[in-house]
Length: 388
Image (cartoon, rainbow, N blue to C red; front, top):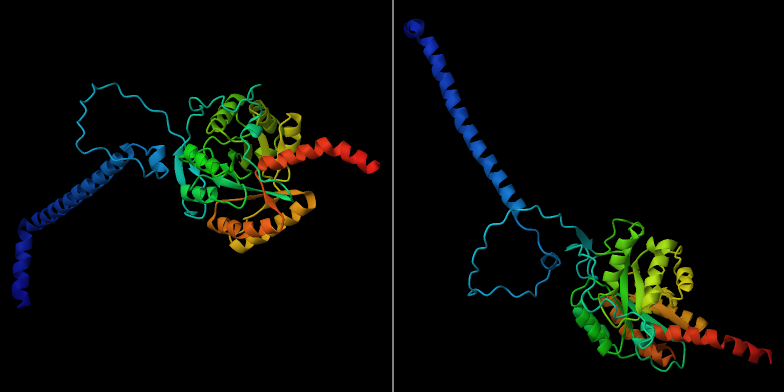
């Protein structure tokens, strides 16, 4: 059988059909390859089109990027605007975006992005804190009413205020003494929140972002950097200082690099002097030149004694408050800085009534400055009485 069919196959192949068979196989291969290439090209083209569509979408605005969710949706029955005549397209300048610090203990791993806004002050606020003969220094004019200081004084400063309106209201409802709330200049609803705090009888600081040693740390927009040209530094200072009214001074948000730079701090102190504001040094670095530059510019100066919540537990805050009492007994006053964390607020609420019972008075920051100035003024008299 093999010889029978083998002979037929041999005769068939020898009749010129080998070339035809090869041609047929090659043609089939080309057909299959072309189809596959066409499908691959279509898929690649689709991906490129999708990428182009995504890149052509507008960047989110500062409000949407920061998670603003109280903007009303457009009315579904609003009339459709007529299309404007086509204009020549121009390339918009790139938008600078900067990562903000996370909200206290609520979404720490997250980072929000906001546009680096142009450093120009809001209308009507540019000169609100400037000193005039009629108004006097802002740090005295806007000082909160202090309880009678019949014992060692403690000033509690709450940094990073303004990220959470509910916590601002909770702090504003504090009734066992006067707090000093240091508001970041870039938070939302800033005027409304500071008004809530003042209505509760508390004092206001501006928590001014300054350059840290670590350039990767989120500082917020319009931070003061030591390498800025004087004109840009002035513009950012002006923007920050004009963000709110009725505050008594500033303290540094971060700033371990800025507060150690003498020319930069001298520039800042001149602006504070012109506006009658005090400076609270948070002492984020031992190399700070805050005291020297404030003294040279005749700016009222204070410094932090205790950090309350550098560890994230209510027990640690309670221990730091006890340390604050020790400092207050030793020097007659103490300045402690905390943040609007849940555990910090709870610890303050639990501690304050007992502190009053132990003879401590919770006062606004300006009360400590007035106490210092009174001591300086009365020093020679006291010495004279002691010598007699």
